[in-house]
Amino acid sequence: MTRRSWLAARGVALLSIGIMLLGCEPSERVPARGPKPPPCPPPPEPAYQGAVVGTIGKMHMIESRYPLSKLGDVLASFKPDLVLVAVRVDPFREGHLEDASFEMTYVANLAKQHGVAVEPIDWFREQDLGAPETAAEPWDEASIAKREAEVLVQPRLYNFEQANGAELEEKVLLATDAEARHRTGNPLVTRRHAWMQHLSASAVSRHGRPKRVLAYVDVLDRPAIDLLLHGVGYTMKEPVALVSKSKDEMISDIPLDVMNEWKAQLERARAHVDTAKTAPEKAFWTDRQRTLQVVIDKRAACCVPQAALATER
Image (cartoon, rainbow, N blue to C red; front, side, top):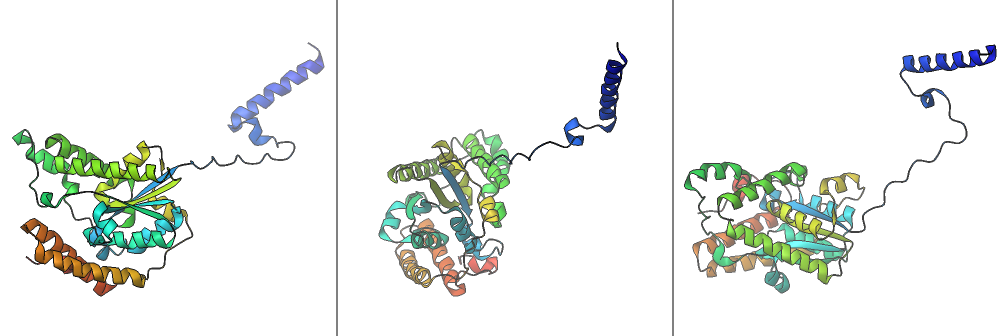
């Protein structure tokens, strides 16, 4: 070995030892030559996107951290092509949205103001109101069924982040599955969710598979609609993330036409109370009437004590 080659080998060995001692790669110590390459572009947005907002019904009037304006914030940030609302088909076609929770009137009006198509996706029957739940089978699993499904009977007193977060959605999904296991399918809930999923898929199909679909449903129905939209090819977006990344926020003032619609709904709800044929049906409309009265008195602004929304017996 010549002296020159020996010195070269020795230099390589010393460099390797130095790199090992410093604990870094050569690229971290040796300056790169030439211009720095541009950063990789972000991945393209999915062509078809969906989002499902879980609402909390009359608890919007109690929970200060989940005002109606949050529902509008999601719409403003997501900019949907189709909005699905938890209203039954016939009352929606007739313009009688008192059949649903009051916030559905707000979001339906908001969507129409933005030129977005709105479709109803709720389903239930009056004769099923107040129906007793199916007994747990076997009988000695009743306490297990009650414990595993506890989230389904708790008051929906959630803030926006909780109602639309992954943790609560998982709890509701598992609780619904537990009810189905222990109560031979829990037929009323299972049938209602199946109809809601069918109506959602039908609306998407009839509107030519729009690029962005936004659904507003009760927080306990959120997993069922989330799964449906994902199943028909939509990449699901979290409402909390949509709002946090957006600079668009809705003005909290309620439009005059929404207030007028609630007032008309209140009169129809009172009429339903007077003509109800069964006690459960009467209780349903009495609760609607009481909630609408508070909403109108407060102009849908928070907050009232929980007792203010309790239905008198």
